[in-house]
Image (cartoon, rainbow, N blue to C red; front, side):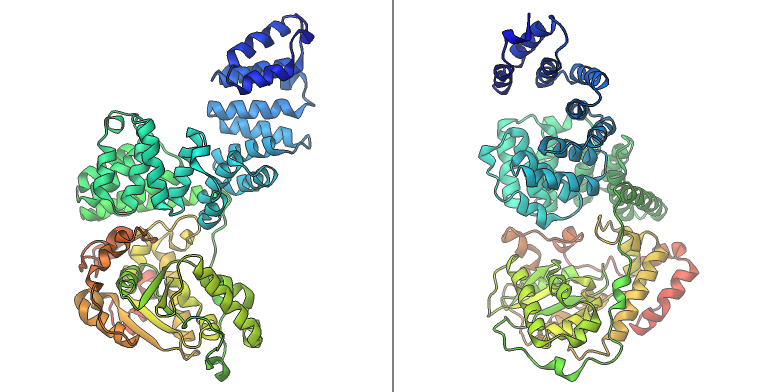
Amino acid sequence: MSAGAYSVERALSLLAGGKAAEVEHMAAAVLRGGHDPVWATVLGLSLGAQGRHADAAALFRALAEREPAVPEHRINLGNAYLHLGEPENARASFAAAERSGLDGVEFRLGYGLALLACGAPEQARVHLAAAFRLGPAADTALPYAQCLCELERFDQAARIVAGLRPAALTARQREALAWVYAQTGQDRAACELYQALLEACPDRGDLRVDFALLLERINRLEDAETQLAHPSVLHGRASATRSLACARVARRRQRYEEASAWLEQGLALGPNPALTAVLNFELAKAYEAQRREDRVMRALRTAHAALDEALKSRSIAQADLGWLGERLQQPAPREWRRPFADASPADPVFLVGFPRSGTTLLENVLDSHPGLAALDEWPALETAIEALRPVARLAAAATADVVSARKRYWAEVAQRMPLDPAVRLVDKYPLYLTRLPYIARLFPEAKLVVLLRHPCDCVLSCYMQSFGVNGGAASFSSLERAADTYAAVMAYWNEQRHRVELPAHVLRYEDLVADFDGEIARVLAFLGLAWAEGMGRYRTAKAERGERIRTPSYHQVVEPVHRHASERWRRYRAYFSERTLETLAPFAREYGYTVD
């Protein structure tokens, strides 16, 4: 039969209408009369639409070999490889198409998906962003947002999917949107979408596992357990993600041996480096609770090695401490202390300290006071700093420039929370400890609350914690590197605090847990406030408001205050090199601790 007997347009219309088998017969009939590249392509598309991706790949591979100058064959082949779960082959196919100078939504989207599946999200981002610009629809928005989440650009990802309506999406697209919602902290929307998806497909164990991970993250443990107890999970396919979800819930319920067993099972499945790192960090927590220090340190070494491999494969450069060079060399000028009359809210309270020093606990306590509202680890100050960099410009900045930067700061805060003139902002971001010159210039009436903790405990806790892609993981990849980071940051604080005249209240984590009410009363007095009714419910306040605790210590904040973490480093004393202890000893002495 000749090609003219059938219409390609009609075939494509039938294909779009879900009649792939009919299109296959039509194309096969035409091709019995001889080779026709257009109809061969239609045949390949019909095979793929029926889930016969291996057959489709074989056909497109033959077409690419027969007509190497036609890049569309490489695109179709790349898409077939993606469906087959062969991302490296897909990547090679799209790269070959790129050499032909091809562009367009289909090419950019497919190439971006292949790169993302190969664990190269930064390279994928370039193509997926281009696809989204060329065709801003759900097909391009969701993969682009997923890529941004992999790069921990959560706010940008949330903006990309903001206009999508779940009711207008396919089931697969709704699954992707639920995942993006969960990653970007849109917890209520994510929960509603997961529940709707599971009502339609109750036996999707993989969806229940994803849902359980979200529920645990927002401290809804009983609901997470319900999802993991469903037969589709209990008797479903083993996966590293299922092991992670079950382990986290078991650890939260203090079933530590069960948690470590789940994690070891997940690691035996050979997950990718990023997931290997997550599982080993979690395994270290389970072993820590069992007081098996040797296994803790073994798991952490594996975790950091896997994280380093993941970062390198993703071509993600880790930030060093170069920004500490932005420092005052002389005391801040007297004119910096003049308050601004620009109708902005009262200057914030900045809650700072070295990471893992207990700032999240203190932030949640202060946030429960009706006269305070906390901005939980959102780098709003960085937007203002960008306008005033470097410090050399900061000293010379005109009043109008500073006022403009202040407005940028408050506009950024307003995107995260309502501004109430009767409520003072608590901006909790631990490493704003290294932003003192900017705080002094922008907010002359700001107050600092500084939380200290034994340097060895800070360093150990940072080494035990995964800080993610953008969290400066390289700075904490060993105890020695973590100690060097601590020394650089705290030396900066010790130097710069004497060059700005901002009122600061300094307290120690160990004193806070030993005399909780007394230390909180002293912080409140420093802020000109008294203890308020309801502050005792700080552990549940955010959950009652449906808000997420954004930091890695989300699970610790909802637990009663205890002293377990104080002096924990002594159990690991054998793993601290003499050089590490020598690095930390001067700071320990200055803050009233010992390293003996």
